[in-house]
Amino acid sequence: MWARNLLFAGIVIAGVGVLRTSLFPLDTKARQVTFDPGPTANDEFQAVVQRVDAAFRTGWADEGLTPAPLAPDLIVARRLSLALTGSVPSLEEIRQFEAQPPEHRVDGWATHLLHDRRFADYFADRLSRAYLGTEDGPLIVYRKRRFLSWLSSEIAKNTPYGQIVREMIAGRGLNTDTPAVNFIAATYDDVKKAPDPEKLAVRVSRAFLGLRIDCAQCHDHFLEPEWKQTHFQALAAYFGQTRQVVTHVSDAGGEYHYEDRVQGGTHTIEPSVPFLPELLPSGGTRREQLAGWLTDERNIHFARATVNRVWAMMFNRPLRKRVEAQTLSEPAPPALDILAADFAAHNHDLHRLILLIASTEVFRLDSTGPEVVTADHEQSWAAFPLTRLRPEQVIGTVLQAATVRTINQNSHVIVRLSRYFGEKNFVTRYGDAGDDEFDHSDETIPQRLLMMNGDLVDKQARDELLNASAQIAILAPDDRTAVEAAYLAVLTRRPTDPERDHFTAKLAGTTGKERQGRLADLFWVLFNSTELSWNH
Image 1 (cartoon, rainbow, N blue to C red):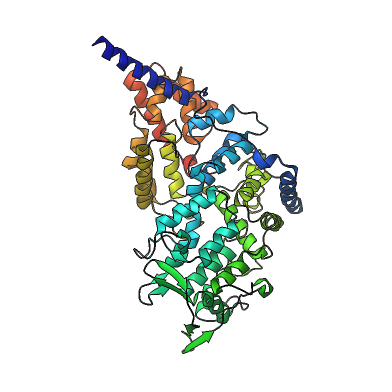
Image 2 (cartoon, one colour; image 1 turned 90 degrees about the vertical axis):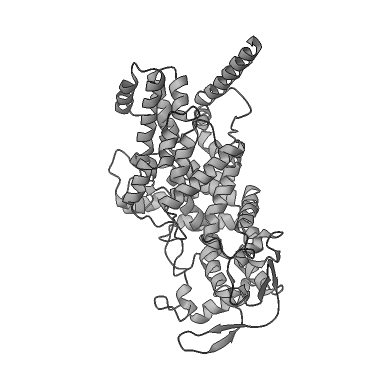
């Protein structure tokens, strides 16, 4: 009996030790984050950042705008984590972040996230919305999860983005063995028993050129005279020979015919590109020619569209007015061309592009300052733009903040499955952002009620043993430290003096279940704060 009691006591002590290392600075190597600044320390890299910064500063001077000051490091770390993983940093990660020398902690944090599988999985899911839409698509002929797994692996390996796109557009084979072909299979038409060339033309123009020329599908564009129906249909013609038999995508002969829905009749059209025809390869299948033209390093429109989309994913707002414009001439800050030229020159290196954006002064500016921050500041990027978090970022933040340890690929499978199903259930009820990712609509009353009254959010705040609120209540050495740990876990910042004094007073003199209950209440309050739901 005594041996059994001794074993039980040992397990409890060990468990408390593990929890305590999550609450306070770690001294175990197994869960240490590596803060390596990587390529950001390179002089050539920094020269590009300085050119981008100088371009924005010139614009601010011309407009008479004084930029906001730099944001605190923890706020920048929060932005990076939200943009690259869909949730805030864990308390465990925050403790390690703050232990680093200030001069390279943010750069090291950005580089660390790019090597974390959470980034690859999250970015793959975000990018796939532009490639595939949000529908699950036809069964058997289309394997979305296989595509997402493949795309995540390619992003994790930092496969050149141009190569990834070429595989999607020109790939052949089974949708299980060659997952990239699911880009084609996603448009499979049950009536035609083949992928839809017009849908593919829409997705290629939107996802890879940043163009909305859909109106030219049936007639010459009403608003943009440069886009004729023949431009759209000639682009679709590159997919006119694409065939799919059950799960196999291939190419065959024949010409592409399209129906003129305005004038009537069916017409045959040869494939051609809407601009830069000199970049079109002479050999290969039609899809291979299109893929080669699109991803040619001299096709600056591909690079611009990619930079604009990645910028939008990191700021929740594109560098241009829209992610997908109706014309190639839509104005944009000079920084777009600086970053696009670097992206093309470095073999479409997606990781490098993300690090460049994260290293710019614009990304690290505060959203407020001693002077009033106006709409002009945000419009000209003289302050970090305030934007609402996406639904999966809201629940991702709640789920991560509810545990002091990092939820990642190294977490127990039960923890990861719980997060996956919890997030999926919440987003379904909260409302998915859909294909229009950057539509910043106002929060609705049902969404606010879901946060305040929903079981999932309430469960994360409860004083259950594995929740952060209970762990902090048990292990924090004093009330001030407990309040600070709660703020760091949920909002990635320390409380202001009035906030700390207010909640410390609420904890004063409490012990046991009463103390745990009050910490749970604090977590619930922070989960439902306006601050949690915004990127700032």
